[in-house]
Image (cartoon, rainbow, N blue to C red; front, side, top):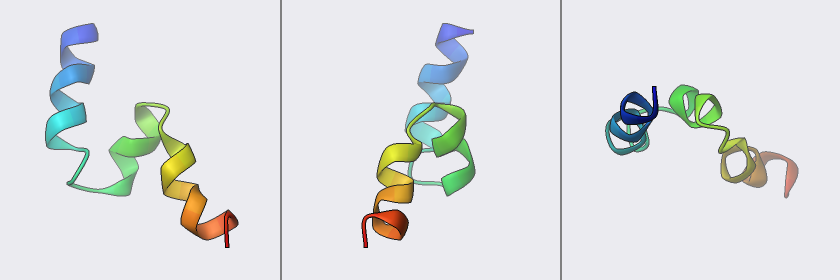
Length: 36
């Protein structure tokens, strides 16, 4: 489980916003939307 998240972090990070929320990093993703 941990190893899978690590891989997705490097491959899905710059891939799409969907994986971002999966990792619990919705802060930077919603920042430009709600931080406006």
